[in-house]
Image 1 (cartoon, rainbow, N blue to C red):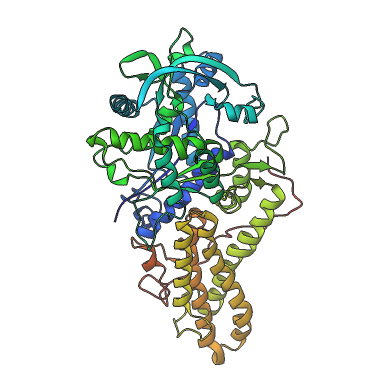
Image 2 (cartoon, rainbow, N blue to C red):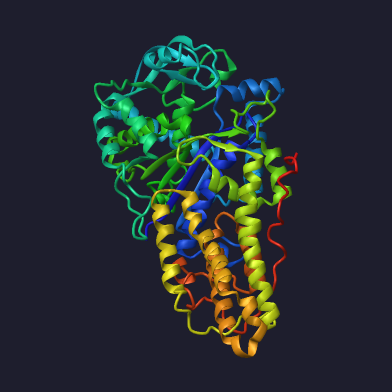
Length: 561
């Protein structure tokens, strides 16, 4: 089975991590954990120790050749490399805190990246897809990118991100022949709009899609003719300004430095361009924020097409299967701003994790975030509402109720697996749940990937309400078999639910497995989740009570700080 490769953007090192960085990376982590679980997760089976699945590769990292790195470093009286080193470590620490299980962390100042990028640019220069010229245009200094005349006019010649005036610049540079690939890009994106992440359990390699649909329409609206796709500058001249001297030089021309965005895009390829990692290419999905859609959905695939055509050496370089651009977070109904005091930085996230648990924070990000394109609100009231409904009153309460009844009526041991109730088809139920998860993974819909697991919890709650085992247990002589059947169905369903919820809540699900002596072995998900199958709960095995998973939160309490 082909390998699966998942990426986040690589993040600027001129600032500290915040909710935007953590959100994208947690989404990718949940997808990676699902993919490992689907294949048979050695890491999971070892209780969080050991190596990850060899056929799943999850990459994140930092983008370090920006002008702002140089200016920020100077303001702190350190070298650009020292400043990049310091902030790259902050990102590593942040992602470790968020429970992210990336397989590699790429930094664009690393030799392994710079050498590969030089090879790619050399090939594109030889093929003529990168050529020397002169550029005049509007430049967004904050974003370090040129803006088209049309886009500049529509934005009243101000940055759409910072609101600051754009700067008119004329400078010598090297161009990439983006215009050459306009028709091919249109055809690929139009033909790949329904392309899945994987289908029927098998990753599919042909095709290229931009998702969600709103992002796809946005891209096609800008590149369909009569729109004109202009060639784009890929370098900046090197001057006496120290900021212009930081970065990868154009091969054979030290007077030009590679434009930071072009350098950064190649990280996805440079990291896996080794004999043991090429099996992962093409990427299954590039998860990004909507603000960097143009670079990833237009310039990046065009660069790959050009590189593939430049030399037989690069005939393995195919397009990624999907670019997925999610929306942004707002805070308490307003755009986040440090001046407003509603900016959700890493300290704020840590405060929520300390109070409600890291898994609760991961759950909220994964299920309530702006994945489908529209912006989402990180509201304290909504956080508490979701926490109580899904976790405290949902998963936590359900696991506690079932565990307590089994301890009370069956001495803390899994009751006999009597024949299933006529109204409780466990095998059909879990088969349906797995199908729902697969469909959601096809769409890279993280919330829907997790929904079937929580749906199982709800079904168990409803089943208990309907069958009332606590009432039947008042006469165990007459109803013992019936109580055993009910509670076995409940416990086995919760075991399966814990598997499906573990990508978002690995620690809490591991606590269930430890207490219930049902840690999953190395086996594919469809086998692990088989109701009453080889890896099911066995009658007579100890089923202890985990510590309370989630304590109910008081909605009247102020946000943690």
